[in-house]
Length: 243
Image (cartoon, one colour):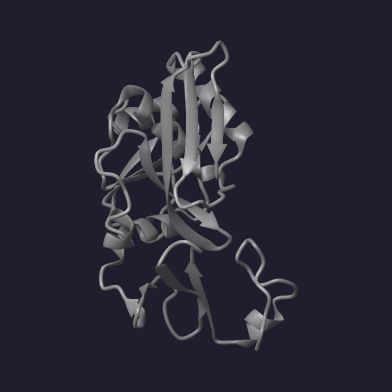
């Protein structure tokens, strides 16, 4: 059976093909990266919460016994401006590294550049940080990037963007075992994100032990991670040691 996959990573057209089969597997990989991930998005006879990690070598695809090390090895250690979040790509949770660089502007108008996230969303988050936290970002150039070249439209990465900007601005690095997610509102509140339990399970697979997320988040079946709930951006940044 042959089916077409859209740019969002879902099967195109009617869902007849996906309903006919017992198992649907996605084999993911970047064009310029030797690592591949095998995920089950449907499995009538088993779990869909497991992933397989492989590396393309001279002998072919070789399994990786430690997928957590695969992701953590690519992150800079104790680097200000680096925050890990979990975004939903269609129906799949994906861990991403949000990077930010805040530097004094040499011109009258500070630059705002983004790669992988919506530019207007970046402007809103910067405005919230200036208004609600009193940060003087009007004289700073701000660059935000999603490592790996991925494009993210999930609003749950807002809090990670804000944390990365403040981390770079204050020159304070986050703990490597901490991940962040949540939508940021115009009044500075942190709104709940959908499928939080799946995001936490994905983070736990890769060795993360602590997560800062919106207050009142419902976690189906609980979580093994240490959870820090935050009602607003200021509280979240205080939990991360950035306030």
